[in-house]
Length: 403
Image (cartoon, rainbow, N blue to C red):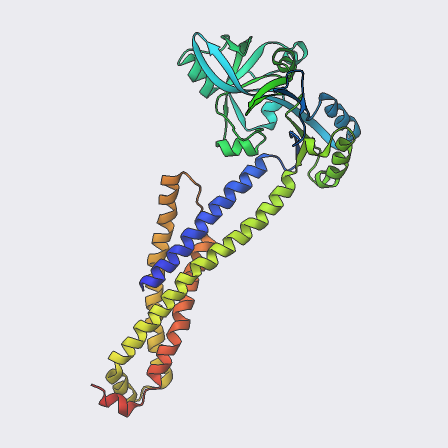
């Protein structure tokens, strides 16, 4: 019966872990927006040329502000709006002697509507900030605590690089670090300590050139936009328009200067992968149930041997073969049902423990519980047939002689 218990438990637990992992992956992709297309600047492998100083190389690549107008004009019947960003990594920020290395995101006012953020205090960037390229910023709650501790940050001034910005709002970036990466945060790191400034102010005050250090020298990178999110009017237009969008960008850029991410395609592939993943996990766990079935069969065979004389007496008193088969099948199924119920209880508990200690989502579905329990009963019936038939086929006379 232990085999059935562990088999049912492993099926439920593994499917719960697989379901949770699939759910997290799908949620991350859905946060990108099924009606969105994300275009990101990519540094070409051979995109550097030597400057005046032989240890300093200049790399001019990626999306331009002109690309935004090209896309808006070319696809005006399909595109609802666009969101342009320029990201400045490893930027030093000061306030009253406190210094934090964070990431500055120069963006547009509707960033708040198109990204996983929640405004806590003050306001977000507005059109006036964009038009005037004002030195205003919105900080994350994590950065606000690092710079101001428990002081109200609204209206305070912070030094970003060599420029001074006034804090007008505090927000919280919802989701995990991985969620924010998937939802459009460019780069390998998605820091909690972020600053949001108007795109125009970012270009005017922080510039479009950054100096990146590497072994043996520096790279001066000239990038106007790190990322461009294109929101279509409806989901059905996305996949049909992407090839034309790529061709339009190929006219003004090298193909290796940018990458296009289509969340709708990612979602479809992720759903198919999740389905296969759950089938594989369920199949692996089901092997434990088969082992449990073999264990029950061995137990029942031993029981038949021990109860040979009892079987002989029943047959001598007129019991038919079908009655003997039914008796042993019922006993086998009872063992399987008891083991299945215990396995279900443990199988529901294990994912909760895993989620508590790993902070990973696990989802126990009714279908998984019913499937695991149903398979355990079926295994009991299948592996109980042979011992039951063997008991029924015993010769009554030989059985009565058994001691």
